Amino acid sequence: IKQCFTTAYHPQSNGSLERSHHVLTEYLKTEIGNSDDWDDWLDRAMFAYNASRHESTSYPPHELVFGVKPRAPSQKAIEGL
Image 1 (cartoon, rainbow, N blue to C red):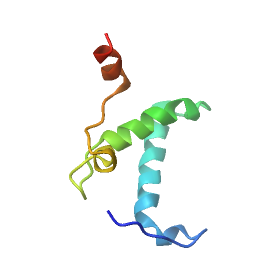
Image 2 (cartoon, rainbow, N blue to C red):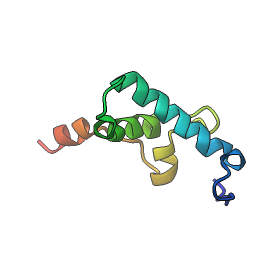
Image 3 (spheres, rainbow, N blue to C red):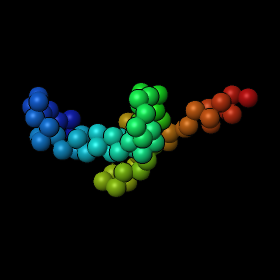
Image 4 (tube, helix red, strand yellow):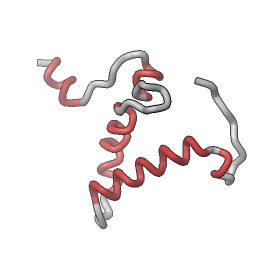
């Protein structure tokens, strides 16, 4: 993974980030429709995005950053019993 810097206020120069924003926006639109509580769904949307395998890397972003497979909060609760 290579860190890249882009120009402020010029989204065309940062296509991959804009694509991830588009994916999250579409997910939120699908899940909440016309509701105003999008911020209640944001954690779920981010987890779904970060836990999903991406075609370009063949890995979920979470695994690339942290080196382990992502675990859902429900998995953590079960392991704590």
